[in-house]
Length: 88
Image (cartoon, rainbow, N blue to C red):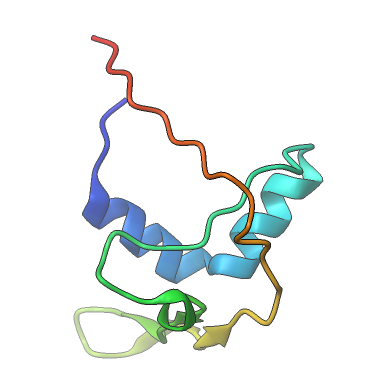
């Protein structure tokens, strides 16, 4: 596995903060929260995702993903645990 911040940010924008967390919670990961991208956005800015369009070589729209805003609340008083191991 390779960590790629740009790919993560694109995934985050496409799926959205709320949906990422909903999927994780439905899979039983209740104590996990994904709240930010690897960009210098604040808490509010990370709640927004941009519109994404897929167009073909002729300029025809193939898919439109509308902008989203996450209204869910997060408990930021809890200790944030982050991994820091590298496996090769």
